[in-house]
Image 1 (tube, helix red, strand yellow):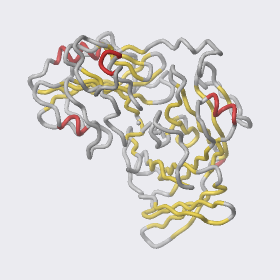
Image 2 (image 1 turned 135 degrees about the vertical axis):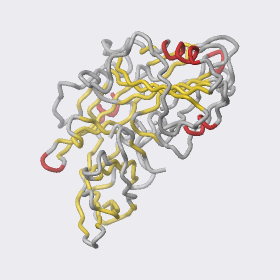
Image 3 (image 1 turned 180 degrees about the vertical axis):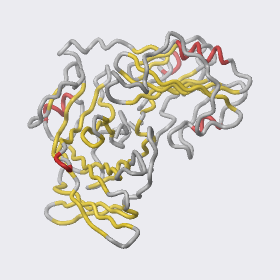
Amino acid sequence: MCLSLIHIAALVALSAVAAGCGDDSNEVSETPATANAAGVSMELREGWRQADETLTPNLISPEEILSVGTFRMEPGGGCNHMPQHAYEAMSAGDALITIMERPGQAGGDQAYPPRPEHFRFDSIRFECLPDNLIGSRHAFSESGRKFYAWVAVGREASRDEAMAVLNSFRVRPDDSADDPSAPGGVDWVADGCKAIPNLRQRQVLLACGEFSRGRELQIRTERDSGGRSGCLEIYGVGGHMSRACGYVPYKRDPVPSSPITLDAIYRPTQEAPFEIYGSASPGVSAVTISYSDGNGQSDRIHATLLQVDDEAALRAARLARPFRYFVAEVPRSAVEASAAATLAGSESMKINLPLRAYSPPFVYARE
């Protein structure tokens, strides 16, 4: 689910000038600055600033990695996959650019063509954009990474200036990729898992296990240039597509405070089963999913429980503590479901699973 793992990242402050003293990083810099986050950057014009936190805290995948605008940007809103609160705060002269990244390989994906020489404002309406704003959407790939750029401007804002900021977008080279001594400079495969040909530099294969119908399930994470772990990627559920866990990247280790925590529910199409993703504490030995359909028929299945406890892999991923992660598929006919964690041989905890159908390409965590 690349989703997050909303995938969801802590953004760097506007610049050393604007944020070095711990002041509000939404304050406007007196001079043009560079906005940096997650290995990408944009050059800010006068009056522009970088958001100091993700504006889409409940979004798992794609993951928001950088937002810049001409006003104070607040996170959240009822439209979880877009920065709705920020849109609602915009005046006629304001502009906002949000960059999101889809984890996974970019090569050969027609939905993410190579970056154009120049981005052009296409004046479209997209979901959750208020009527007083005009939008422009761009999906592209660069340096093996897949991005969305969402541009929103007020009726009196300069579209040319907004596009100039977007055209300054750069993917910084990975200086540590060929240096094994650099933080996160090499990939790693956990003990008991086989190496895979498409494992990228700085990507760690944390754990593997057998999923339903004989499929191999893998959990990976990818570090940024500073060595920090990003969203957890789950491979083996959606064919060649990856999924992501629901914890907020860079904010904390994916170790739940309770024995079991629901991270996300995903359903790629109306015909597909529900995909259930969640974190578990190291002491959990099994997770059982119980469900029922609208006709009163019920059943239960055992979720695949991945043990992320390889010390070398955890060190390579810069994760402090071991954890477990469970994945399961529930039939599309299910209307109610719950998950139970078994700890020390006895059922210790149950949580309800709110089954809601989501449409791609967005995936949401439970709030």
